[in-house]
Length: 374
Ligand code: PLP
Image (tube, rainbow, N blue to C red; front, side, top):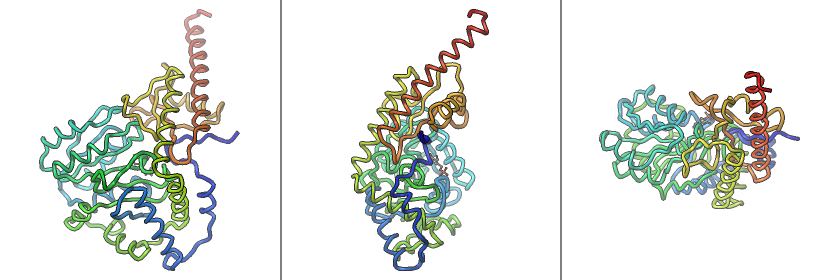
């Protein structure tokens, strides 16, 4: 039995993407690449639901934090960072390291940030010119209510800068209609590609802020990337194989239909949650805000996440992931984004149920042996 690869990224590659990865190199300054890249960006704009710009860089998702900050802010500028998980924490840390004046809106991990909480924080910090938020907090399996948060940020005249690394391509995203200013994601999540391509959408207010930004920038200069994209190229050598892969993946997404893709993920989220509850385990995310791209849950009482992950791998061929930061031992995270379908998720959840029973039985035996009652 092949591995049921259920990490919240990287994710499995569909055959069309694997085939695209095998393609020979071409000149990244020649007409074939130019038309491929133009088509890729046009499809990427469609799936972001934007008429504005989508750009790419050879980089992992973490680069998005720095790329976003240096393009639209200036050193010392005040921003509000929403922290309700490890990725929000890292985004805030990058902003501080780069010299922004960062106020933090701290929310319990597992809970979403609610618009009224953002409203209060923005009233307390009326000077902030941007809000940094993670749409889908992969570390906790929580989806923040982005449309409402974006509208709140705009009401306060702040830019909304979104880490959508584990959201884009899996859960609803309306870049223009929701008034998002800048949003980025990574190829290895719901885009069904290998790691290595950073994808970013820039709206009109982000471009206006870019004109004012005084951060030194070179590799991350979005203005340079935009100028080259208009010619169907990138400022540096692009990761050609991942661009081929991204083109193939976007073609698949548009063929399936974006609404169908979002609906498939919603259904997979339901199946994963139902599996956790049927096993008698507890979901980590606050009800109503559970992610449809990754499900986070607690292992059986007295069992460390690592123990359950090892059992899932050795006895069921299911490769899932543990928690992050202080939740490292407390959470199991199971990905269902990208090239994911009912059969694999049902198999993974059956494995979770079976492993839970086995862990409970061995736990009961261990307690009985330790207390001398056998
Ligand atoms: N942001 C979020 C929400 C993520 O889930 C991840 C990775 O899991 C990252 C950022 C960092 O991306 P990368 O590991 O590609 O640098």
